[in-house]
Length: 375
Image 1: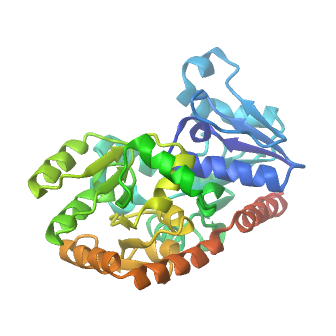
Image 2 (image 1 turned 60 degrees about the horizontal axis):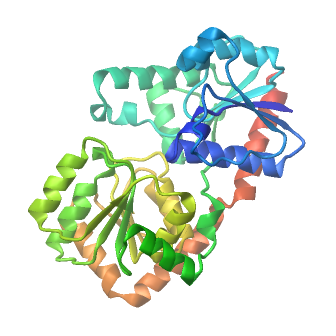
């Protein structure tokens, strides 16, 4: 089969959507090497390490317009290119399908990661909300098959877009295999020295934006008088000013911010952490939760939404807006070694539900059924 991918984020995004794109391409390429994989991207970030699986090729714009207006090529010019390249199935890995594909002979699969723009429109500017809502609605309308990364996302698609549920397949995400492998003691020591991190710390991972709810972690540490250092890994946005002001008000003295951490270092940081705290207000899946579970790190996360799907029965759940409840949960885990061990073992077991081969097989089943049922 000749399979095309929207690979823009695979080559240019270091976080969530980029990780999903790279993992999906790698898993399918390694598991099903007889297929041809065409990776369509308007540009490539040379500093991003993405080793391509065998049988794959990078496809960039050939036209003048495409070279100088990548978004135009990706949104408008790509539909004709896919036909000319003999692509049988095209997978939009991050909400997007090109315009002009409604009547295309190319079969279309799109992954919808979340419906935040519909569920929480207040989190977006007017322009961004309009763009995201229109983009997702268009993709779901023209797709032959929709992949939702959680049952929560599937339910949201049904609710907001009135999509036939029989056309939506839930396929969970996985994470990089490095998170499933225990780093050696020497490696962890070197990584801690590299970033100037303490031996013991609480970990938070995610873009520093309102939805990730980092202020609740800070307030909980203040309320619970938790003096263990906090390590925050994630891209800084303008919201960092609010966070820094709150840190000063709360009197926290030992907060470390890290950006652009390579995955091999991030895995070691997860494994060294005493506790992972993720009180996000809304997610489609919450990949950092799975990274923590796979790394053998106890998890406290939010109740509701998709979080129990990702975090499993041994994680602790709190109201993300109840700082006292979060403080109590953090102190409970930090003070009880047996509880931490129980959470670690249960988390590693649960993370086994997201193994690479299982995810790859489910995705290929979707591809094959989409091609065969829409001929």
